[in-house]
Length: 478
Image (cartoon, rainbow, N blue to C red; front, side, top):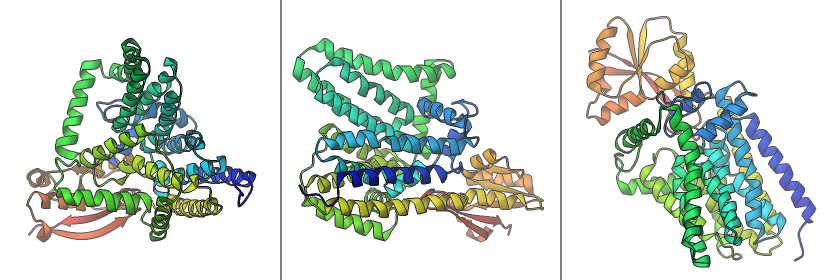
């Protein structure tokens, strides 16, 4: 095929872009622990204690251990975790290129890998002190190891994907549906060798790899029984109270599906809430549909479908970051189809879109760094108030504790508790956040006649869709 530009140019382009993405993401990696879960992870670097939710169940031991290593160099624990995420995510350029190399030339494989890793929303979500970025990086290493094991016939080849799946579970347990890929591997091994003992040994090895981190975390909690008891309480709360799952969400199921597909996946995940980027991908998707043939591994496709069902039903619909694996897999498929075809303009088009989404992503990184989270802004302003007051919040109180604010604040979920507790502050100003007001309204209590809006604080809605906007209200007695 006659190339538009020599391979050396595309290799230099790819290496240069990786360096730029790495530098920008590391420089603007978030130093803020602005949500309940982010505080859990940040505190775990100083004292690992599941009972105190440092972090929450199941403990994320591999992620926390990696964070502790980086924390030895970077003093801010939230920044250390964000940097770890970026490093692990960008390391996935190697397994992605190796996966793609079997179906396309090296420059095309490199550009397709960069198109996945430079996803604007993916970069933003990775550069935060959650485990999403590291989990995505490990997930791609796991998928590469899985394909490698499919191509080889030795039993030892199955140990690497089993070990990497254990690491994945120790980084982010909600990626468990991708364990279905191991079932494909074992089924293929059975069809090839018809040896039950060989398959049993593979299953046992995978279980032992999981036991490494489970036993280690359980030991910190006093044993397996206390660990699983704590796990049951966490899972019960996730599915019955605060997890935002389909079982407890007030959203109609049709609205949940609409938000899942249109808001979270397309508008936020693919387009990063940027009309130009979404339009570019709409055009590229149409071109790729008629372009060359590209095959995703069957195990990856089935695992992704299982994870999609899990994310739709068992994850918080308000947090698009739960769709990150699906976003990456979709981009891999789109770019794989486009660049597998021997067209001269394919690489140039890919380079243009990669630069566009990299620019959008870097812009979002700069914004989240330049504008402190809304809850930080609220805390800073309340510090300067001289009169006596108390603030009633929802999850914001966890961040206030992390910031060691000097003013009183209380988490309140039920209106009856609020009515009783506020009597302890008869001579103080009573404030509450919009999440408290909305929570009372959801309980059938309209407090609009009793509250006066004081101020609204805003930060990146992409970085924090739940607490990116906080409105402070003052309670007015009638």
